[in-house]
Length: 279
Ligand SMILES: C[S@@+](CC[C@H](N)C(=O)[O-])C[C@H]1O[C@@H](n2cnc3c(N)ncnc32)[C@H](O)[C@@H]1O
Image (cartoon, rainbow, N blue to C red; front, top):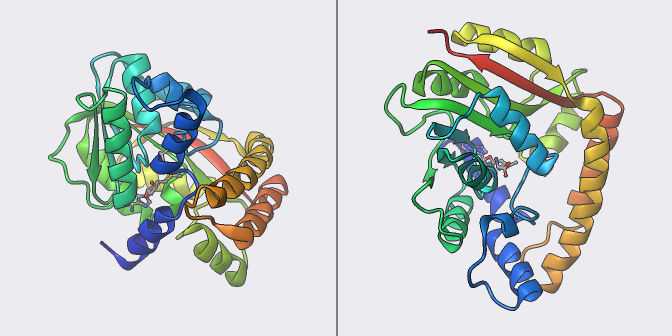
């Protein structure tokens, strides 16, 4: 694991969305954790913007269909992976660098009986632990910001996709280059390693060999979603502290408010990209 990836894994070890937090919440709500369905987890296990709508959009863009083998790059607790598996009947392999995300994903998969359809694997997006061309489609959500060398990760996705397979993903982008001290704040507070502009992303995909199918600037809708997410983090943080789980504290929340403002002012933002590996 590279140093930057170790920093990311440490950051996610203290994330307010965690398997223990989800289980505590559900047990309090329904009395026990017995016979939980994947659907009951959905309000809590999606660590990206716009929840299930975003999953549905990416699945459509990646042209997922029942029986497909799908790769989720940086799969976290496998919230999206469980949704793709149970709602669309695909088999999902998730790869994630953070041991506590992979352990949490395994625990939640088993709890809802999806352990044979959703496979979390500990590994780096820059060095995927799979043999070539075995996936029909690949997805990723707001994760490449954590990856120091995005060209390496894109090349790895390209390598493991079958010809004609699509990679649909969302990520943070930079609209205006940020001063180094502000970028350093993003590194420290969000484990954000580097950001590309939308044209740079499109160019990197093409250099890798992908054909760019679509590229949407989603900054405006993220501005609204993020403001709601900030209040969710404020609530989760207070709950995590009360439950004795790690809290991110005021510094994180202050920085998140700065992030929301940077997105609303189009200094940074979001993109949804779909790319295809040529036949
Ligand atoms: C924002 S979360 C997204 C989780 C999940 N895709 C979701 O939407 O719920 C980002 C995830 O990327 C993972 N990650 C960051 N850098 C990585 C890398 N180099 N290789 C693999 N996973 C990585 C983190 O551990 C974290 O679980």
